[in-house]
Length: 200
Figure 1 (cartoon, rainbow, N blue to C red):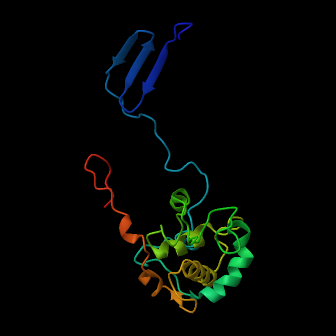
Figure 2 (spheres, rainbow, N blue to C red):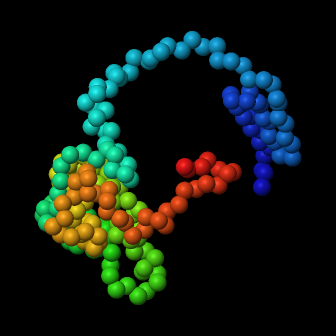
Figure 3 (cartoon, rainbow, N blue to C red):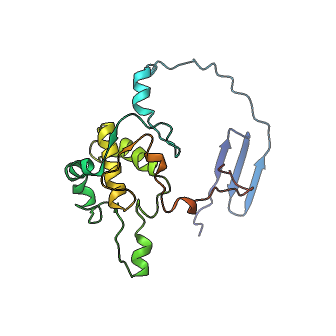
């Protein structure tokens, strides 16, 4: 309900329009937009250009085909110790207890509602390389980016093994990790609708 008449003026720089809105009326002016006449400086004097080493520390994304994976390797046996020290407090001793996100499949679930919530690495993530990528950039929660490549490979191997996808002794590295076939890989499809921004 309107207790008092309101007048709202909207200035839209992109289209150069002025809208006047009041109860029961609407007016749109279609004057053409004016070009920006201000002489902006090239920089505002804040910060400095990033050095190549600084960029390299952040440029760690890994593609599904393995491009971007660094040197190093690890096994599930090595990752078990690292997991206990740096991950178990958030994800539980075996990756299912929490209090934060569950990482490992709970086998033998019969409740459909519980199964629907049981979306973890082993039955939902489409690419094994994403496990490495996410751990490398975002974990552990209190010190993201602090793990060495060796530790990340070992943790990745531990989680893949815990989800029943590799053997405990399998060596995970830049060559072997992209070859791990995730069970849910083919369930992810590109959004190819023509009336939306397509992902191709």
